Image 1 (tube, rainbow, N blue to C red):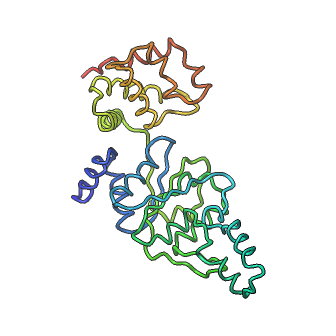
Image 2: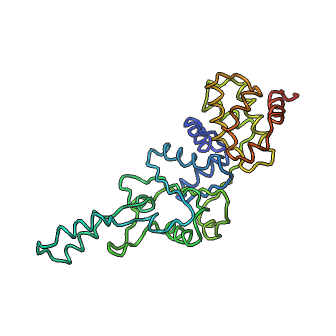
Length: 297
């Protein structure tokens, strides 16, 4: 392993993010090559958290654009402050001001509301981290615009002209694969696919985030989650749910899994009514028994 990757792995873990060498390598290359990093994987595997940790390591601002169906360019880029513009127009009435000067004033940067994409381009101090979260939820038209933006890191506002980034942002895009992204966007980015963690990694994550959790509890939680994800679920629990559940167990002063407590706290893991109804108390008890059994050496 290259020393740079080893150091980055240690830095990530110091920030509470347990990663594999492949993840650290992708982050290192994206930063060094100034290429967008596209991170795909199921919900809850740590995609968004990776961008947050990167911003902390770089000591810079995280600018987040949460994508959703129907997201348009104006909402993501900029809008004019229409109420203030209208107020300024009314104030100019009867003062004999030059209409062209008034128009130039109300369509200046003073009345421009910067949304995440424009903020990432106009960031003055240093390059921020731009997180385009769940880009797969946006439509093809927005994806095409995003591709153009990532190519040049500049935008044209008709009233102001072209604005170029003095400090192009580090870009992380995440996708839950609810739809297939276009080939052009994929080619523009470095790519990382994140899976649910292995047992050993999940135990390390638990012990890193909740050091007060004893090894026994961490391993039982890890084995329980590994078995639970093997079932056919509508919404498989991710690392965030693992950590929430561990915190709940610690709050209840549990040092091991017990069927009754697991049944009462299963809502920390399962967030779908169908999944809750499918897993009966007896099935949960069987999973607890499995989790408490030490594997044969």
